[in-house]
Each structure stands twice: as C-alpha cells, then as structure tokens.
Length: 135
Figure: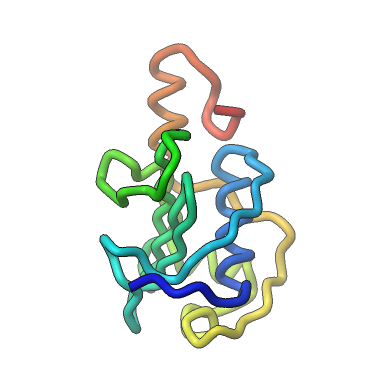
C-alpha cells in the first residue's frame, strides 16, 4: 500500500532522475510504494502522477505514463529509462541501505544520464528529438 510521508533523499534523487531523463523540472509529491508494486526491503518505490521510480540494489527504473494523467500503471510499456543502481548511488554519494532506511544525503545536484533511455531511443529512431532532449 502507498503511504504519504515527508520528502526524503530518495524523493530528491527521483526528482533528479526525472530531470536527467527528459529535463522536466517537475518536483512531484511522491508516495512510497504503489498498488501494483509495494515497497520491500530490497525494492524501493516512489510513485506520483506521471512518473514512478523503482530501485533495487542492481537496477533503477523510471516509469513514465507519457502525460496520460493518473498514476503510472507500472506496466512494462511505461519503462522509460534504466540506471545501474551501484553506479548511480556511487555518483550520488549514498547507499541503497541509507535510502531504504530514510536517510542518505545526496552529494550531487544532477543525476547522470540513464544507462538505457527507451523513449529517447524510440524518438531518435523515428527521427524525433535525440535522447535526453525535451520530449
């Protein structure tokens, strides 16, 4: 079940991931967990309208519902970008455990670009904007 709680380091990192993915300056209010995917000891989940972030110790996924409104369904077709969690957290100067436990301080002001940008690659293949550009 999703719980509304005060903003934490994972919320702030999730905002940075959205910016790294598509430049959106939105700082949405996130809930922890999602009806389709609850948060666990080995899976951190932040969800809002339009976006959701799922982090495991190995990979971090950004879901984007492409502006349809309402919560992401967290379905495979909404996976927009993927980061390798160890490298992402090393750049951020924190750990998975610190984020899971509600702590962690971020040592970055911007997230690295995604390791895989599905929407960007699709746009580029269709002759649209280059990956990382405005959607």
